[in-house]
Image (cartoon, rainbow, N blue to C red; front, side, top):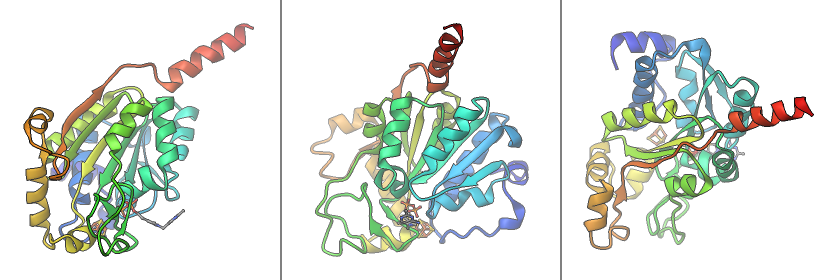
Length: 272
Ligand SMILES: Cc1ncc(C[n+]2csc(CCOP(=O)(O)OP(=O)(O)O)c2C)c(N)n1
Ligand code: SF4
């Protein structure tokens, strides 16, 4: 990120960041802060809410208002903030564990409610902070510290879940596709209603090491190869079994958000 963006939004006294070398979190943080800069966000009108985890540490590094909450519960805290003051820009940072494993119930209902929050979900396919245990997004048959002989469970598609639950905007990108990621983050924040950007990201320390991709560059090559457009995905033979996934904008709707619906009811209640 530019020197000016770093000076403005990155807490200088928090450097160096705690993330392992080769971790994708720094790329996502850079994309987010550049998005704030380009959108002209003021620190006192912006709130970053996190849960717990490696990505959940990000609030410690950002100069806007920030709230570090409990694992899986970032969305209810953020919902309270937005309901109390709909003028604030509220961005929620969660790992795959935080958002759709322990926090799955809250994720579904935030999307159903279409509350005007943006969720930036870093999907590194495991619980990074606590030692690389499997999560709901760990691909079937892959190895983690708690699936040493292969994962018997099918993985959950974060974006498909957000779609069926009612989110207004959903996109998936990867840490390899940093520029697209930043644009999706900007579009998501600009969209009223619940928006989700999934950033598929390397955790070389755990997921990579357990799945023959010890070095981050190998993980980046894997993201470059496996993340494809919807058009390309449809042309491939059994893409799911081969580990391909779709990147790009997946949902783009304009349904009224929670605050607009709530305001209508409030006015009706005052008249009665
Ligand atoms: C209620 C609760 N359960 C479990 C934990 C332990 N815990 C902390 S972080 C974490 C996993 C984080 O994984 P993820 O959300 O995917 O984020 P990452 O570390 O991979 O960025 C777990 C299980 C906790 N802090 N609170
Ligand atoms: S454990 Fe994984 S997710 Fe956590 S900082 Fe290290 S590389 Fe990143």
